[in-house]
Length: 123
Image (spheres, helix red, strand yellow):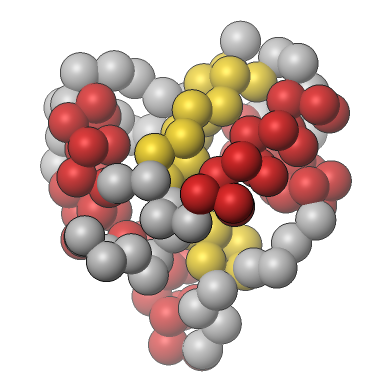
């Protein structure tokens, strides 16, 4: 079972991603976090196979969260994919330079699953 963390301050999006992915692929364990600071606490102790990370969050933005993840002992090699509404050229270039992928909102669950499978090596 592949373990995916979704970090976003939008609870509706978290529900949609978790519910949608579980309905189309039962082999995924999707865990959601609406607070990046709390996620980082978990991230220091528990390993994930993939992290989907929003950029625009009030507590700690996705850029800083990304840096913290990549410096952690447990998840520093875990693929991180930005899942964000930021579509400006600079954000996409910076995001793609550091992260494994960059998915813009809005998205469909089948499209998201296709990208996730690519990052998890299922396709």
